[in-house]
Length: 93
Image 1: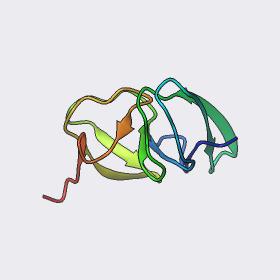
Image 2: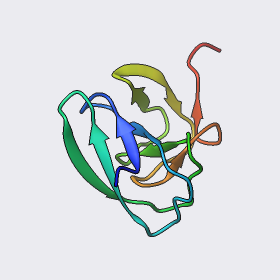
Image 3: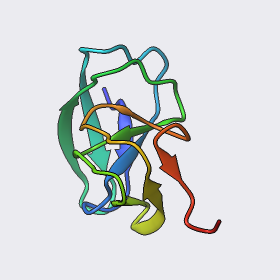
């Protein structure tokens, strides 16, 4: 079963595509550009449609989704954690 999807192997976050991701769950993700699977453990509950961090990121790091810069980290994020507005902000303002 595919739990999350990312486009580019260099993405630092992916989109959860199933309901009910719970902390501690083993997840499988599909890297679309490479047509391969990756595994990750969820560290937090993550709602469908929200982002999951694929690697540890520090404050100030750039978040990459779909192969593009989509913001900066404003609070530390660990691989498997929920990546959303509480720890990522746009660089536009």
